[in-house]
Amino acid sequence: MTTVQTSKPPLLAITMGDPAGIGPEIIALAFRDAPALTAGCFVVGDVATLRRAAGCISGPGLPSVPVCVIESPFDALRVPPRCIPVLPLAQAGSLVPFGQINAEAGRMAADSVVWAAQAALRGDVAALVTAPLHKEALAAAGVAFPGHTELLQAEAAAFTGVTVADMPVRMMLANDELRTVLVSIHVSLRDAIEAVTYDNVLQTLRITHEAVGRALGRAPRIGVAGLNPHAGEGGLFGREEIDTIIPAVAAAQALGLDVHGPFAPDTVFMRARATPERPGEFDVVVAMYHDQGLIPVKYLGVDKGVNVTLGLPLVRTSPDHGTAFDIAGTGRADPASLLEAIHMARNLVRR
Image (cartoon, rainbow, N blue to C red; front, side, top):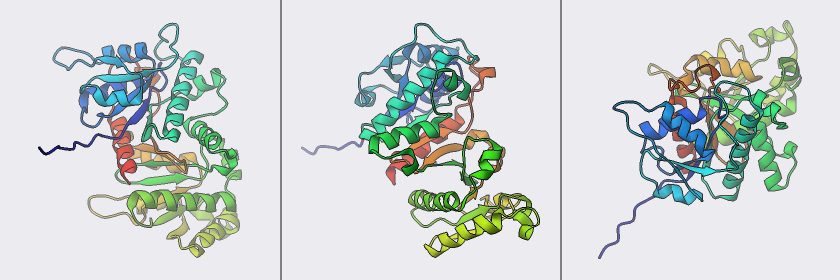
């Protein structure tokens, strides 16, 4: 008798996000609307919160979305389609209200990220996909990190026994048309300018080359945005390009990286954008600060954007939108970006 081998999908942990926001709802929608994609996924968080989210998306003629409790990640492989497997952490005393900054919500969101990160670092799961959290709620809960990226960086550094400085990470936002990687992340604009140093720019280029190259299966073409208008216009509008960015680009080129720039930041993203009519000139753009890089990608469509953390010894993706407190609990949230994040996580795991 011939035994037929059936492949099982890799295990993906989805963190609940802030329970006062739309994270639990988009998770419930993902399990309801994309059962094939969510096979092998499970949620780390609070069971009552997920059951409330499933109720928010219920209605006549719609499939039911039951929630079941699992004891280990592997139990998720035995859960039927359109059922949300939840690995519960310490549960809150009561459901947190929708749409409000809440310290308990911040703690629950952070706890789910820490658990999932540690599971991924141990190899118990193949990747983690993080639903949106709220930075003010994190701060209210006493969490020492402003967002996912910094929290995951600290967990990875502690797990591998190195300092945070020796675990450099970068944020990439990507959709079908554009990828951008940031030199700095969640800091003030004044601090972001100070972060444009030779070492930081060169390190960003090296991390981008390695991570994006691994995803593409070839060396990526990297375009670099200047910091100043017109990339400084030869020093007329600032010397950061001359003194810092150009030397870092030259050093990266000497290492064999396919890097070009710096270019005027108001045109480099258009040059990199891939459309059905033409491929982009670059595979990825390195931006000097958060909004410079994220505004172009989000303008092309929040529903398709995915946030990827580069430089970690694990795969982490996330939707590129926030908690949307204004529509939390209404059932009107769009799961498209979460679905893209799950899809990208699976693709990165296969590389």
